[in-house]
Image (cartoon, rainbow, N blue to C red; front, side):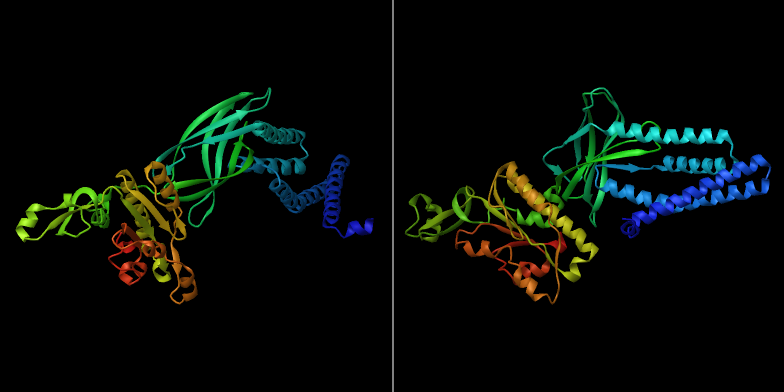
Length: 447
């Protein structure tokens, strides 16, 4: 049994810690006895030895215990945090401990006991304050970048008799570039009585669009002294979808030319706006004959009207970018502005009654109308990021199916629907990938 224990690290740690602690206690006892019998030199030497052994214990034992506690907390929803005031208080405890061991003054031992008791009370009461507490957070379903978003935080104390004091709530999120875990503080509750719910309202602003994963809720308390802050992590999986903020189309010069004429695309139909006057065909209805034009040309002429009763628009956002262009910070700003332009076009077209379809990479929203469809398109557009393609990466380029291939092949002559392509110059109609007559492209570089 002893042979097996000798091979374990924990056995060596306990053995060495016990020897060091026993030697320190023995040196302190020798110092006390020597002081009583008048051997001052031996008492001084023994007290210094006891102090040295105490420092060795601090340097050897405490870091290993801290690692063990940290590993235990990793498997628990509770964690311990020492604020600056707690670190100062620990330094004071260490100082009083050294003075008490070196001088043997009973008053210092009494002060040390009070300090240790204060630390223990701070740990126990803060732990009690966050136990039995649940938190729920409500926020709007649709969040836009740059807008004030109200978050309603409800803290419920499930304990029967004990209140919770100085409760702080926060949300653990993964955001930023590069993505990293961040803490968003939600609210502070001075006291939550037992069997009671307390509500708080906080305004948050998300500066950037995108998908923000939420990992859980943090409940913390440093009551009563603030030397120790106990934290409790309530894990759950969720996410915030932050939409790009639509802007007035007057802010985008390219969009004004695209939407000119209400995006009717000059297609003939049964609308009320005149499209063109042409020569009569046998399939034309006689009600469409323009007698004035017939008299002037001496030929039978008919009027054609724009088709405004079946207004469908396809908006394609091609995020592919050459590698040397995508790494440019100026282009990245243009890309964000292009995403904002796409959101502005979606908002404008939906408000104007069009059936809008959004293509992003392999995602196809399908045609739809109304505000709910608008929110669905913005949700699809929110996580779009730059997809860089190397100059000699031919295989990767062949694997990527162009977002407009299917759309342009199924359209019948004379029944084309307006198609707007937002892409960089290398993947626009100006690069020869599409016919300029089939799409109306907007360059990201000019956004």
